[in-house]
Amino acid sequence: MKPSSFKQKIAAVTILISLVGCTKENKIFSLKTIRLNDCRSTNSHVQNVYFKVFIDKNTVTPLTTTDVYPGNLTLPATFKVAPTLPMTLYSKTYYVQLWGDSTGYICACKINMADYKIIFPIDMEVKNDSLNISIMGSWK
Image (cartoon, rainbow, N blue to C red; front, side, top):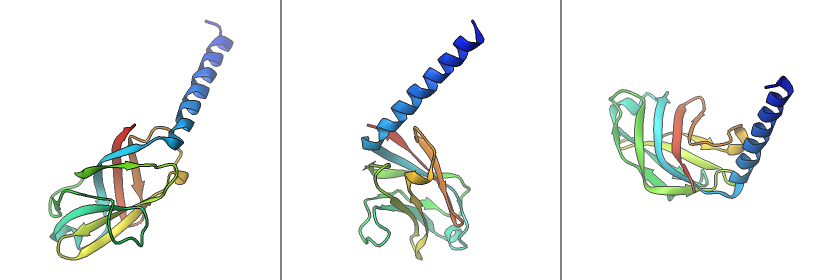
């Protein structure tokens, strides 16, 4: 195989992946699980913790919640989202909040796809200075 032919094939595959990735803007991502990788809160290890997902950080009613996990167990911990949340990741910003059963709100992070260079986020890590999570799901 000639080097120029190989480069052309690589370029064609790259363009194809980019075009397919761009079509995700109108697709629905189904959030199935949230993995808690790290939390820098001093309260999270002494209580049961769970997540709430919001479309607006000032909204009171969550779009969905997760199951509960004992905060004194080791991390990472995977939380099942119930019900599964259909998300339009490329057009909206979502807020994932960590809550405790005794203290309430612990910390949060936002999911804004404009901050990421990911074509197919099926296991995407989102973090800030207080919370590190991964969201997992599939595209519809």
